[in-house]
Length: 191
Image (cartoon, rainbow, N blue to C red; front, side, top):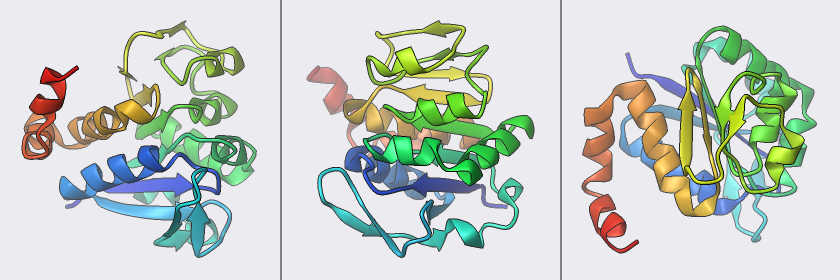
């Protein structure tokens, strides 16, 4: 059975942090629903790119049908998601059900609002750690996985964030099957 991912978004999202992981998850064969947290048919990012969504939040009756819940960063998108009580409750439910919860850039503030980060090793966009309660914070690691929680730093690591989600849900071979044809090694060699 194909694993399902709920990818929530609101206006003001960081485009790279949405499109790159979304593309990677779908390349890996995951069933991903891009869901508008504000019940609109389309959302506009912080750099004025507008995208259509697959579903609206009011259409989600049982979040636990999903295997993972993901949010991109960006401002004010992350703040909008953090202030959305339904999104926060969905994160709590998924985390408590031991399903994957993932956030990049500023979006770990959503995890914090759900009480998820308190005892976790995390990363996020520099300075947002000041708004988060955590066990430890790394400014050096691009992506951190701590049990069923994945956090990542920002736009430049959006690919790595997507690969980490794929590996968590489908394994290392699935990750490599997506990353290698995307020429991740060329990127690594040029950094």
